[in-house]
Amino acid sequence: MDRGNVEVYVRRKCLGWFQPGVVGLSRACVSYERAGEKETVGGVYIRPKMLRAEWCERKADLEDAEVVFGDFKARHGDWDKAGWNIKGDWTREYFAERSMTVYPAGGATF
Image 1 (cartoon, one colour):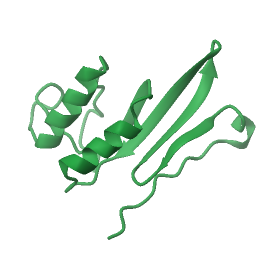
Image 2: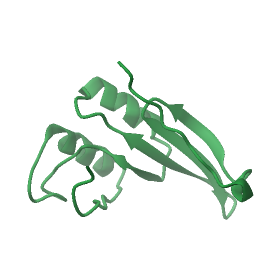
Image 3: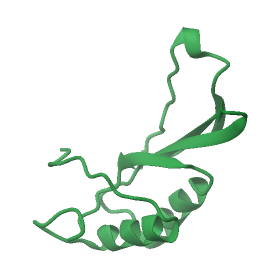
């Protein structure tokens, strides 16, 4: 089964600004310095039939990220009045534990 890799692209003029972190199956993190402090941005793709154990692996890879974006396949009443799924609970729990705010896409992303 091909799970796909996340690739990170940086414009040539920005090379040297970002340091690659976790890059692999369905997730990637890059770090940069801002005001002398390291900041990390992480991205993730959650497969439609991903199990809890695999979700926890993705979550662990993103622990250092101040900004996390991606396709979580998550529906939850906090941001999606039209529905709910278990990934919505997992995602809400993850962001709540980290005191992060969810900014939904505003519509279907498929």
